[in-house]
Amino acid sequence: MSLLATGLVMHCRAGFESEVAAEVIALCGRHGISGVVRTKPDTALVRFTLDQPHDWQALLAALPFSEWIFARERFAWLGSIKDLPEQDRAGFITQHLVALYAKTPLRFGRVSCEFADTNEAKEVSGFVRKFAPHLEKALGKKGMLAMKADAPTLHLFFETSGACDFGVSMPEDASPWPMGIAHLRMPIGAPSRSTLKMAEAFFALMSEKERASTLRAGLKAVDLGAAPGGWTLQFAQRGVKVSAIDNGPIAESVLATGLVEHIRADGFVWRPKQRVDWMVCDMVEQPARVAELIADWFVTGRCRRSIFNLKLPMKKRYVEVEKCRALISARLDDEGLSHVMRARHLYHDREEITAYLALI
Image (cartoon, rainbow, N blue to C red):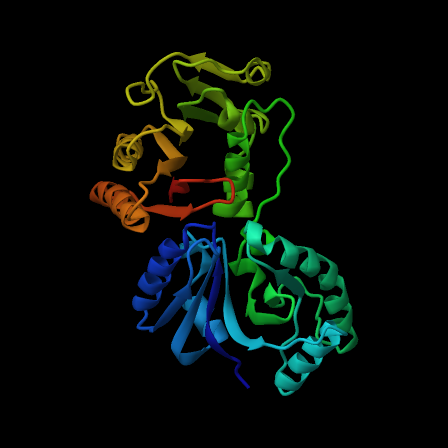
């Protein structure tokens, strides 16, 4: 028996609901999937109700998480549970799920109890954190948990403590972190919080295999707009030699790694004498100009992979991102350069997105 999804639920940064709305309509439109967007400003959540129910696995396969930019996390929406009793909410939810899916082989490998990432949802977040262990215990007693790494994740989103939406995703096709919120520790010697952006990008935009083969000692990287060195530090700590390009100062803690050469120059003008493994770029400039710079480095053979930021305008963010991605892909396609490009509005991003580009 196939489980039918009635829609999609997407988490995002508060204030970016319209970008997720535009994104889900565009992605679904490519596959002839129609529906209605339901959201409110600054709620950090977008619901997409399908015009016709879809098999949940086929729906998620058509819309792989790697293709999403502004959604931190998304899951196939299977239904809602309302009027939860104050006593034994966990038992009530469990009985509902058992009755609903008694004839299916579906078992969950993980339970993700979720809430909106907003100040207004703080009260709900406190309830959810205390409630989650009780729900896992109740589901386990009823045999609803498979405890397998490749089993589906059960998502329960609580807008209030008295009601929740529920749905599923696959662990290999989702954010590495619940709700897409990356709680990372500042590295010792980090000169700025931007270092967390790069740390998150490594896990959000690259596979384990890609990290193992391209973030290792002996490789060479260039960091354009490096000061004060937050991104540079992430590479140096992995043994990568870095040319830090910036007219501004690089923190002593970064230079102390012994793997960093500071070159005082304009990141838009400077070029290496030989090809490097990595070029990364976090410069405050118009996104189209940065996109042109990135494309130029690749088509002239100066690097094989890059992570870069695109600072977005206040309006038409999604449109601007699509323009930049199309610009880069067109330049590389014209040169016959096969490539992969992924982008995400990271948890540590603000008015920008972070992208990964590599030749294949």
